[in-house]
Length: 484
Image 1: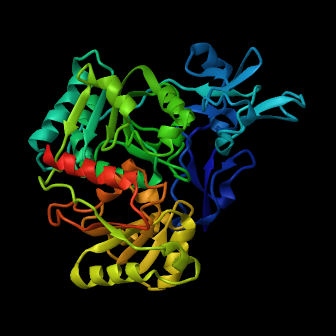
Image 2: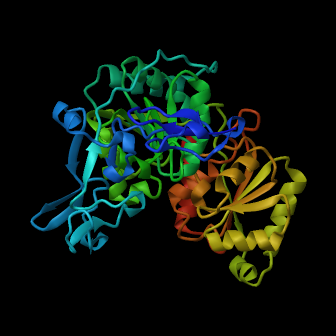
Image 3: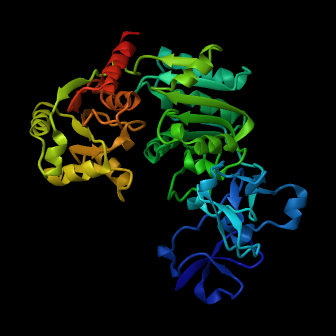
């Protein structure tokens, strides 16, 4: 007998019914299958705290007159027009070139305006409203399933974070911590305090890889706290929870939902360079929200803004107490000409052979572009060496496989420059002279080495065809952090 998930007429929740019992008015939610092979109930989108288009709602969630009158549902303008200047109220876009006209079925006009900047999340137009739902998310009593101990430096920073939530009138704090300082564990007391106060939390990060790294660690530490991970393609992107770990892009779907906003890697691309992402994060926060900025390389503008009011928590040592690995600068010559001819640069080959011969660690090789990563993988042609980049179809799986030591070497672009932890790696940067490797990027990449207590060291090589100011400044900054 085959069954399906359906929402019967007049009900809201899906149920399993034999195919023979499905009626014409039932809303079928799944493909037919024997019950043992039937997929779990498809979750309905959670609207609480969201800012969604009506087209993103299911039939069971269409806004009713009664809800609008009662105030349990609110509508707002999708695109505002002020003196003919448009503003998208989902992503904050005000660039006229990022708006376009189209023939609109809904309003019947052939000059209906829509936003191109956030079109990948559905079309926001001048005639379609955004739907907002107030928050009724339940808050469990938090239970921390982590038995480690914070260092004195971690405790000081963590206490500052909690104090802002408890007493202080300050709404912002910069946590300036070296790579590998243990920032995730420092958040645990803040999460406990926020949930005890029935406050919603957002951990926003510019990179999908960081979301995928953080969510299992948070769920392991807080097994009874509902948390979700939001990124492009996430199956949870229409759900909600007291704790949300999200890419900054996905915060566009929220409206004044979060009491506590933690922005990890505040200086990272694309958040630091895209004002629409900053608009999205601010829109997702309540007006009274507390903001926490985490970074090993914060922008000078933020340091200057918060320094005068003692709104910076500094951590100059890694949690295990060992210094940051200091990079070595190695001239490699015209490496690019070799790669373009399908050959492995001789000096790179020599350094790779030496690393594999003398070290038990895995190897991360950072390169300036996707093209170089793919060419290098093809040239080396070894089963235990693979590349990954932002457009790779199996990006998530490859990073996890490397973490479980299924590969010896991972060739990567700057997508893995920050926010990901591998317990025992050496790090090479091929083409360190390239403009993509800024001071901040070089410091962050160097910070991938020596992150575990079991292996607190690691070799970091800047392989270059000419030293740059960025390389010298990165080494200087790392040495300065080690001296503090």
